[in-house]
Length: 214
Image (cartoon, rainbow, N blue to C red):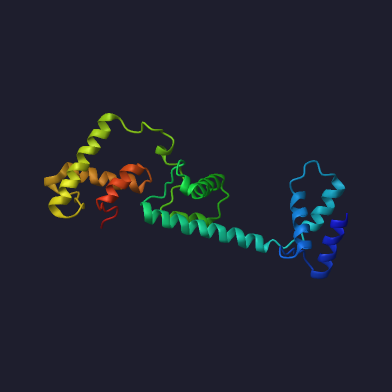
């Protein structure tokens, strides 16, 4: 009851309930009020008093901090794409685990219909995929031996192509290198869909593969 009375006193003085963290007394009161949200089986009379207090609490700063945190992660994931040429983060990537958790949360919120439209649009604008990429759940044996052998063959052909022509941009209408051109095109399609294997992505990037061409 003492805490309830203190909250009412602040409301009477300020017209709302603002509990700055810098002040030990208001910080203690804020922590107490937050703990009430986690209580189970709260008596109805106490719940009524708490609800009267909560409706006066100034939540703007909390919302601002949440917005700042989201924007910070959005900047991080754009930088991740620039560094690794993908927006798909492996669950095993300990270095980027907070970013993986954030990405997972955005997909869950979008699936629930709870993701803010402006945030969804911002993520979509950088190519973020809201459906979970299939290869993230397939396991170690994603490709057959035959598929791996064919990929390695085409990769070596691409390395030779670059050695000869100085670039990796094999055009789709290049009759002389038709099979290689189709393979190169498929790598870009796989990358655009967010399904490119991390190891293959790195190997192609290391030889200067162009992920986007006119």
